[in-house]
Amino acid sequence: MDPGKKYEAIVVGTSAGGLYALSNILTELPAEYPLPIMVVQHRSKDKKELLEDILQHKCKIKIKQADEKEKIEKGCVYIAPPDYHLLIETDLTFSLSSDQYVSYSRPSIDVLFESAAAAYKDTLIGIILTGANNDGAAGISAIKQYNGLTIAQSPEEALFPFMPNAAIATKMVTHIWTLSEIQNFLLALDKNGKT
Image (tube, rainbow, N blue to C red; front, top):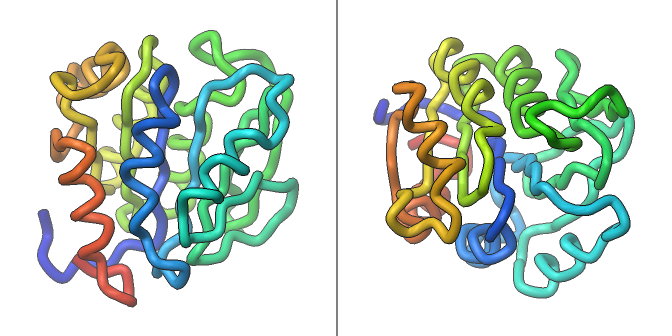
């Protein structure tokens, strides 16, 4: 870790078991959290805003589905809409795409992480949680290549360890942490996003 380093955004990718993992790391974050958090959770396209509603019920921080051309603001968790890739533009707005599936997924973690890495460079934190495929491994590599901070949930703790294991196998993961350790790290970032 780089003491005093300033971060500007967090991206999170998860699949099977994701609701439990997201609930664990997001519930204690304050409403005035200093960074935006963008999430891809693999889910079926008929589940319109159920995930957002469930998380908002448990969390103080604002939870919402990301919208086309929306300006990214701190203190908000943005969740990729079902059946759309979520991308971050260089002007720090969202774009949505219905391009082909990536790693059998739409939304794809890799698509979000790679576009976020290009937009935020070394001020990005990428987190891979539980899941049953390798989506996110290429995205973690992209974040690390821009000198961002990369975190994987400990596979021993993950409900589905395949996704964190795939990220770890890239040798591009800075920290392998439990959900509790990830939450503690997020809570420790100061009001300026510094470690």
